[in-house]
Image (cartoon, rainbow over all chains, first blue to last red; front, side):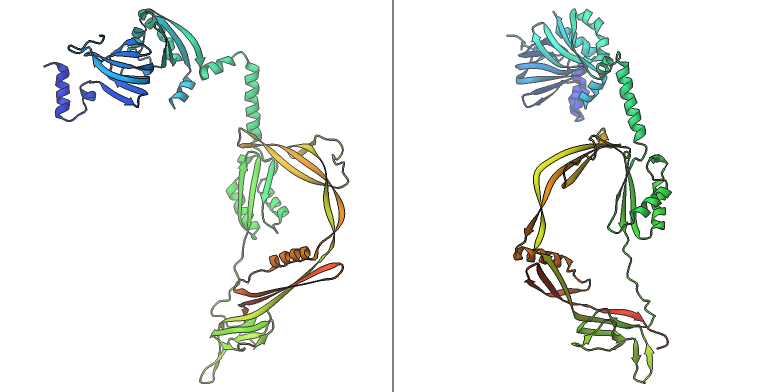
Length: 98
Length: 393
């Protein structure tokens, strides 16, 4: 059993939030103006209409207009702008780019 | 709050240009160099803000990410202070000003007394001076608690004194003491006598012997209830008389008002003269007396200068507005005079402490020179006061 899965399963078993113990991604969206992503692994691509974040297993794609990074540190990144969509990609058979 | 902290730490707006700016940002995040307000300028150019301390750690990261970093804007307290490094005289002058202002506010330059009508201001000032509160005194050397206690001991007519320092101004507030009425002890034999003339409205004697009956006319000082009580055995003893005695009393007030009077008519001419008051010394900003009118009103507005919006300095600016007027003879209509007289007389009509006003009559008359008014008020009030019995009676 992979190490990550063990922590995630343990968190499920003891009703503990998986993002704190299992290191899973934690996303908060405020309206369509602000997006907070915790436990990210860095930025892959930066653009005004698209930001691609590394989340370990795959990527998180943020689509929108006038996107920018409000603040960033090793644990969390806060993205602002007009957010139109958030999707996971690069996992299994789902490529990030068509 | 964070923006205030960032202002005091100082921050820089950076323009980052390179082939892999994402790498630059990832390296920054991994190294713990926090940044914010990132905006995309071009496909290979970004703007980002970070603290000065973090900016100093940037060069190795920029090299590693193959990015060029350029400062677009400097903002914050360290840069503001840095601007004055070469202007030592200006900074010294400002600091000196602050120090001098602070020293001056440690002394009393103005004493304001907020009292009441009948307060002996001269005596109060003397008492305050005795306790060290005088113009030029160092405020921190004055023991306010001892000052208040000693002033209250030496001026028994005062119920309350407070002293508040507002910069160089000492605000003294004094309130009058209301002395309680003198009450005879319960065991002291006494009579009840009339305090004023009247006609007895009702009488209820609790202890003692009634000496008047309802409807009887009494004069001031007349015995209403006696402290002597004769028992069934014929023995007379003295008691502390107690009775509720109400009487109809009347008060009459008259006034007259001349119909011809001097009316003040403003000519429309006015001018302002200014005076600076520095440590209670007046520095006139005009020549002679400044008053060029034969007759004028002088309206004074005083503005106290304040330091940082709260600490009052011993400097005030006084603006005196001189408004010229002429005196003309005028005649008042009878109705107007009656209204003035009525207002004046009704204002003097005081409600009794233990009773009520049951009727008020207002009569007017006039001749060629004056308007006359008479106010007659009928009261029902308690008129009995206790008087200690004479031992040899």
